[in-house]
Image (cartoon, rainbow, N blue to C red; front, side, top):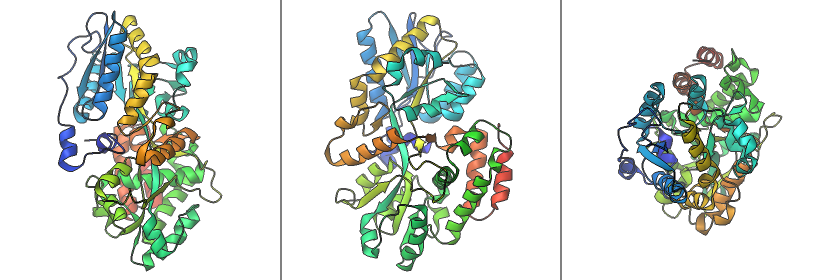
Length: 444
């Protein structure tokens, strides 16, 4: 199961453990039943997406609103568990039997659809429907874009990676939150001297380690450095900034910046987050979904104001824009190139009406998320209002909102990436060996 299947569920109302597993237990129907739109009836369009709360409820609600408002057309929704969906959509598209609308994560998966001519180019459509595009956070379009063209509609929620810190621990040690990367380096020995881990890290999960590489490379060299990798440029990892980033990571490991035994700590168990809210670690780099986990599992830690957060600070002299962020800039809907003209028209009407209406925005806020739709701040109320407003600001103000590397890359390259990241943190490969290994899977 993709760890972000659960993490995307909710910032604020996240179920964990057995509850989280049960939440994803229900699977949709077995798949498409015909060759004209993945289960859509005559004159209708098919929509496939993920099952489980809270997302399924709001996806179905959007379909119901559209069908009620459009009596002469019909969208048929089918929901699948995460792993089942990944396999079924791949098989169905390969056989020309996919749904009209294809839900996904953008990035590498979308790029593979584009290369196989399985999805429609929506660039001109967005150009002709500028009012629709303007309702969506501009930063969400990066993962919907391949070779400068838009192939998907950003939908649902945004989830940036942020730097969390324990305010009570900072007060105890008598230090201030970092405003630069040099501040981070200066804090490491101060926390270690007090027997507090500077950073919590669920290193066994590997993708948590990846967040450090993503931000250090961006702050050092800007978003263009990874853009070259995503574009498949030969030896793109050989950028000197990459070697500098890798050295910084290993210097952090050698200085004991991460909790002792981090390579055996799992993120799926939320053990890394427990280290933060119990005060055993001072800081943690993690997704915005962690807020909900800490709120639910950390007693009164969040409610009492013990949790602080910020965008990752700049590196002195770095070329990266400090507003940049990484994470999940949205979820995405593409239109099958095999769908009929009538089905494609239904999908485009769904995109331009229901998926950008006020009910859509309210629904995703109700789910505990920050919508990809602009001007949602007035809906953020209650104890969590400030956090949601800050996450919205990070997403909307980002000059570049980069997709998590393992989702932006192909599955083959992503596995090699995660394997080499683990070895990098365990000091089992040198920065140059890491670069050579990763250059070997560019374009695969």
